[in-house]
Amino acid sequence: MATAPSAEQLVGILRDTIVALVRRDGPDLSARQLGVFLTCYLQDGAHTVRGLAADLNVSKPAITRALDRLGELDLARRKVDPMDRRSVLVQRTLKGTAFLRDLRGIMTEAANAAKKGGSESSAAPRKVANG
Image (cartoon, rainbow, N blue to C red; front, side, top):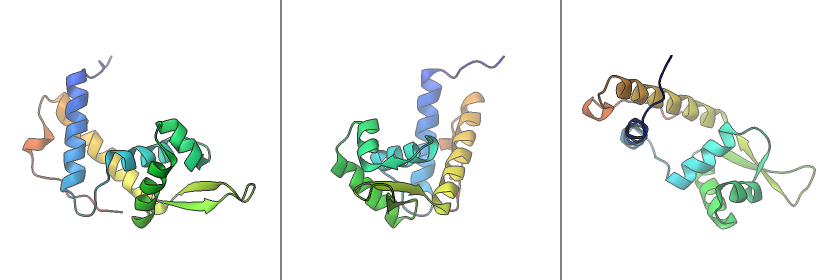
């Protein structure tokens, strides 16, 4: 039976993941942008600015700024809700799906390094396609 990673290992995995994201070619996301992105891609259902603000406990303007950046990078897009034209839905994109796949790969490598007792930070930086 596998044991759960320790808090120290989890923090190491997070660090190695963020370092790999920062080192790769292309833009990197802020913590808020990454939080919005992951919420949209990992939680099922329709996402709105209002709903994301409530889920993440941040202001609607902060969500709007994060979505502006995600839109510039084609990681998410906004669309007027056809059922309620006052509401805006957040949609996933192919490039966003590719980014999530790359992120999962980076995290898997970091987790494997943590299991072996090493740190990816000592290895050469991993080049990842930017979607």
